[in-house]
Length: 226
Ligand SMILES: Nc1ncnc2c1ncn2[C@H]1C[C@H](O)[C@@H](COP(=O)(O)OP(=O)(O)OP(=O)(O)O)O1
Ligand SMILES: Nc1nc2c(ncn2[C@@H]2O[C@H](COP(=O)(O)OP(=O)(O)O)[C@@H](O)[C@H]2O)c(=O)[nH]1
Figure 1 (cartoon, rainbow, N blue to C red):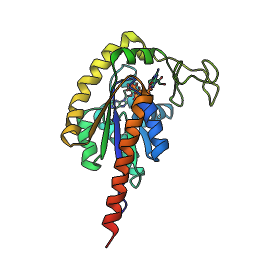
Figure 2 (cartoon, protein in one colour; figure 1 turned 135 degrees about the vertical axis):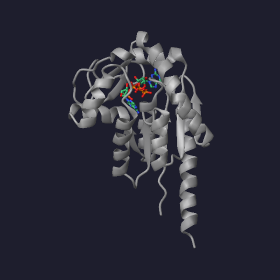
Figure 3 (cartoon, helix red, strand yellow; figure 1 turned 90 degrees about the vertical axis):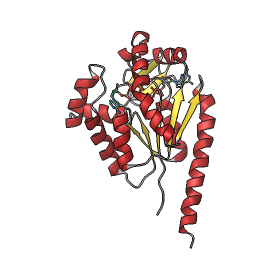
């Protein structure tokens, strides 16, 4: 049976998870699942999970573990025979344990980016709220200033991307992520990357994934050879 490759990406807000995920999905054909994207989709469509999630997100809180786990596991169920990359999930230890009971990850990428860099990037981050498309005025600006490339609709800056909200978000991220990172470290699947530029980190992630996927393909071939 073919073995599917299962990965997750972790890092504080602004660390480049979305940017790097897009590159991974394009280069390696992994299905990209972003918890934030599914939540925004659910909120727009007024689904049960969306209505519930909205009340927490509006208050700057994490969505409760059972809601998040149900949502993400059901999305994963729909693509059970596919390689995937998770972004934004698992966020807490309870989510990581629930995921691990159903799917064992092959690899977890953790991004360590200095605080000053996060602050600069987020103060320059503009998003198209309906699709979640992300721009940066220096790094990947839109074709027309202030407008989404695809729809031409206005871009916005999120309140919690402003420097005054960042320190609290970062502290919160560290607290919640630590046990998750420790778990993946203990499972031997954690790979951490540090730096200030996505374009310098990307070649290392690219070559790690190439090696992992090559090994996986070889293992699958050997297990099929009589
Ligand atoms: N796994 C999760 N568990 C609980 N709440 C979540 C989870 N994923 C997302 N959320 C909630 C809280 C988030 O503030 C909100 C939006 O998520 P997301 O788009 O991932 O942005 P974020 O606020 O975490 O910042 P960033 O994308 O910059 O890391 O949805
Ligand atoms: N200047 C600069 N901006 C970057 C770099 N990598 C990503 N960005 C931008 O920084 C912001 C945060 O990146 P994003 O991928 O949204 O991070 P996430 O919050 O971890 O998903 C976005 O506006 C990106 O376009 C980089 O190397 N340099």
